[in-house]
Image (cartoon, rainbow, N blue to C red; front, side, top):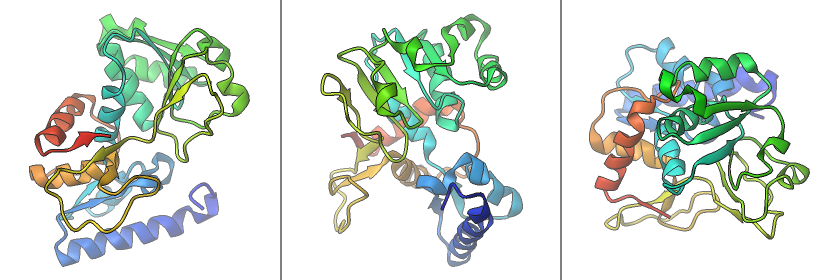
Length: 252
């Protein structure tokens, strides 16, 4: 339903109603999660905080921590990655962060305009690390793929043997390559002292939550007063990651 244009208003109305109810009953942080924070749906939650500027509840998409989890799963010595969904909210943040680390990022996008816009956000000395590519063939020698859009079996076949697929695409891609490895959706294990958890999230084991949910919890624990909506602030990625570790969250 999230991808049907005629359903957009009804979905946003339900999200807005939930936010307003949370505000009335004194909830401190509301984590949007999953497709409720889709950029095309409501600008990553920005629509709601602009419409209701006096909200006391903090609206959080949690994608800053999602980006941090993905980035911290990339070995420090990696020099090149292939990125799909490269101009999305998460793709943009991951590309800009990696460019700062002087990692060459092959950004798959047909839109030169959107690519140039992101490239110009990078410091001048790092802009050459961001490279636009328009087909999967361009990644045939790259062994680190970050998938932000669905990759069909025929597209995955361009990956060389030994490739590791990281991903933030929902749902996850089919794991068809027996000579490659696949990462799961970004998630974190809850602190050891958490008790009474009676449910599991999606395909995760008990005691683990998706990184965007963990981001909402960290937002509350830190007492941050800002909304986390819209574009990811790349400068906040390390800050949020360090806060999550400080509170006892761990990579799965």
